[in-house]
Length: 334
Image (cartoon, rainbow, N blue to C red; front, side, top):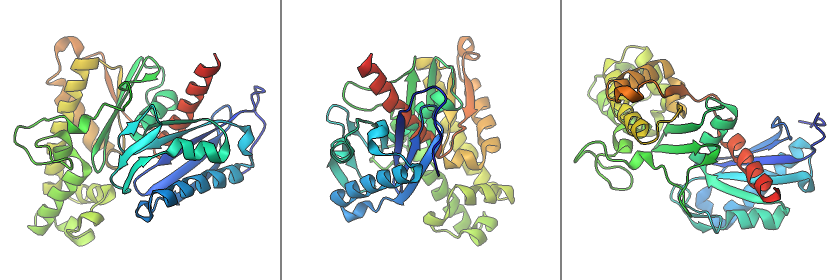
């Protein structure tokens, strides 16, 4: 993939890096945020933190090579990282899915490439990408809800990520919505994550398949949770597994309660739903979430927000991370 000269005489390039639980994606953008180079790798987090940092830097170099761009042409890199972050040290405090703790990710990249690095939570980066380039453009306040293995949340308010003084926030998946409900991955009872994440939906669907209530799912994916991904759930509903549809509708009820909470606290212009589960069946889930939410929102707030499907897919994280890097560099220079 070769790059083209930009039309506005701004020859700076930006890199967005998405450090997911199973993959790494590095993308080089020109000054107009057009993709000019890309590299994708598996994380292999269990190989150890040092090996992981080497893989990150290798991915960045591969993306630069693909773009035909040298490191000294890059004005900055943004990286979306899983887990809680130390924003002052620009480190990952812990990434349980990777087996990493106290990861100096920004320092490692800067030592190798000599351009500035901005770090963000991976969901924050994705929501910022939707704000800048996708479903949340021109909104004053955008809130993102991304059901996956857990449920991630993020908020952009007046062009800036909403974060704590030295940490990320908007952990909407850990808000309790049912007293004494099932436990989530952090051991908390009755949270949104425990009731409406893709993992919780898949767990219920696997039980339905085992009981013979979801014959298509049983024949297509079995009862192994690792096989019951978003596409398998969507295919099960499409082929008439009513028990799976009932489970998804129950999850939508709880997702709607999260919308009610967000609207009453922030009154965002746009609430963006994204992630593989939503992408697999937006016409099944989003209208139901919207209907249930409007039944519970105060009348004075019912018309202040819109629920939208995320537009950018896998590009949300890298585009948002690169845009955050540009915002950071531009604020430093101004």
